[in-house]
Length: 279
Image (cartoon, rainbow, N blue to C red; front, side):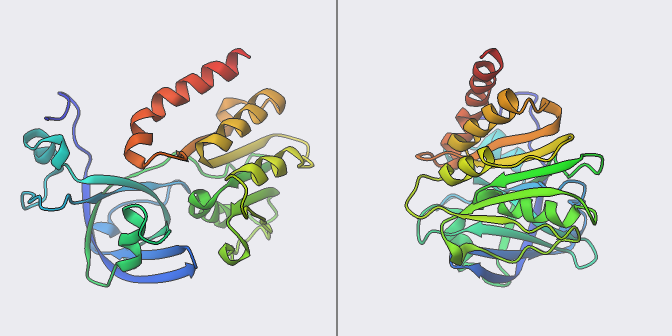
């Protein structure tokens, strides 16, 4: 099936794996490099993301790789699979980009690829996109998320100026999934351990129980769509945080792979906004 008329395929970057690092039992960092990586310009926002392209098994793609041609000439079921990941760090001088992956054994597509990646492996991606960075004029910052939001939260912490006030709440499976998050502001994240609870339960409780500072907050809340919905209601309706001071989105949804979630996310978001804004 051809791409919809008038919609141009995004620019594709070709990179190679430079090295990998196991950060925690379930998080792997893959460092990508190459001359095209140096030209990305992925330093404006702290939630920059890329869409990794994974070839379908048994499908041959045109060389040089041309995503626009692929979408125009090949059936949709042969298009590369896309998986979205946050850029943890981009270094133009070293022509390197760090991407952190949550890995749960053989489950999923990107996680197993990251766990098995070796130096020299070639990977392609589109992007970067992005929209959020800590605003220096905010009186204080709230950052809350699960493992999927951890790379963006870590990058945001590094962008905070010295002396900035922030409450940073991160939910992970257990203490073994914590990692050092240095920052000039000296902010100490609060790590929440999920254990056997549903993802986001501890996070929602912690935000509700927060002793809020006075003044204007800028909030960054991302992760599983279920708890994101609850926290959006809290922030918009109870805290009365203006929409323009809030970056909030479901990165993923329980019971759905990324293809299913991305195809339904726009409508889900619209319904949530209408429901909460009219309540």
